[in-house]
Image (cartoon, rainbow, N blue to C red; front, side, top):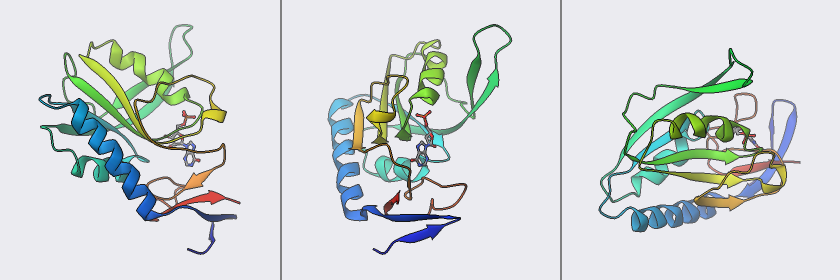
Length: 177
Ligand code: IMP
């Protein structure tokens, strides 16, 4: 794996495809174990999580459903500041076992704003699966139930993650120099 240039920035190889595959398999095995006899609904957050969600879901062997949503933020009319809504969430989540699938939890801001919206609809349970976590970037603490890799606070791309639109199709994860 050689370094690569995307837009104006240089990236170096960080996590190879084999390592990613092994961690995705481990996360899938944990979920299969925990959800035996259940029928979880995976909610994958676009765009970044689409590759992780697909690879993970292929290895889920309990009865399961998946849907893909986009998050849009707007200013609340009250003093609550930004509100995040889900576009494309057309499946009932009341009393369902929900697993959110995220590419990366960075500051935690996105999920901290979105999770209350879901909790409001009273799922039976609500867990989070994330491929990557940057704990040193945390502003809003998020409990990640199923995690692939803990990484330092450095920008990464590949395997679904982009830099300004590019890089999502790269099979490995690269790190900004
Ligand atoms: P958070 O709200 O700060 O946790 O950020 C979550 C979102 O920011 C992720 O779902 C990604 O789409 C994006 N993001 C955060 N860090 C990176 C990165 O290093 N590379 C690419 N996208 C990132």
